[in-house]
Image (tube, rainbow, N blue to C red):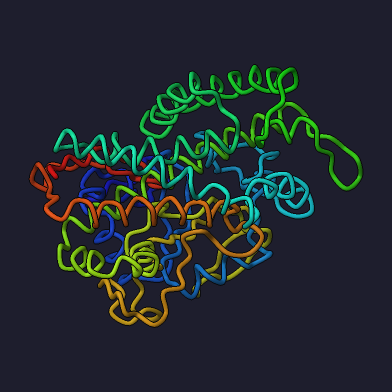
Length: 400
């Protein structure tokens, strides 16, 4: 039974542990009931959760839905990073301020630069899979899904090896801990990156943080240390957590669908298109970053007041049969696989192509090298974080 918020009297389905037993079924139920829902987030913030594809897609482009927290109403209570982050980060700004910071990030993710990372990505995947093969078993979260994106984003930012294990630890604490743990961990990460900025100024490298310490915008203005640190924390957590969760989610899907794995083993060139369909049907980031109604407006037939928090629920929208015929089913030959995993508009994920590169390498390696791979525990024993934004699978034990 869904509890109700003691302050607002609204339902709180995302606070119910059973919601995460099968979150996609929970989203399907919400979407089938209505294209938009009024509820409270687990922290007690009243939110509008939009579940239809048409309205989620429209919302991503709508200039009336804004990111800066100054637009929030008085009942906005989110404190966790990144949902509760204050204005000044890449995720919490809109143009023109967002445009300025976005240009600094884009430097690392232009197609030519991403392509130069391919040999490193494939070498990391091969090394991780070699180790799994030697053991004959693995936890695909700890042994593949986590170390791969951590190595890649660590190279992009210029994070030294000694700090990467800390980033892994901090990120897990931030996303899987309570609000106070999340906030304190974010402060620790900001402090660590402040020290790294000083190191990069003294010992420059060919990496994103070094670039940020020397570059200026079109007006000749440099980034502040706080801007550098905030963007570094956002890039490392977004680049690591989202990709790690997606690798895990896709691997679980292939374990549950050996027919699809067999098809891809026979035709590994189809892994990229299969990935697009998997990202549609089982995405890792379940709702987009919070937005606020700039003025009173109507969404999916509901009156939304100025300042109300709006969550565009990507995972629910992706399975909307009104847009994707038989949307709850996987269809490798689906003609339209255009999903919203990486967002749309000015907030489209700058690391989308790098994430695709990592995901394709990991999934192609799994299906081609381990034809007998299977879960080492009943699927019912797998658990997820009770985190509405990224409810990642905590562990995925397999035998190969």
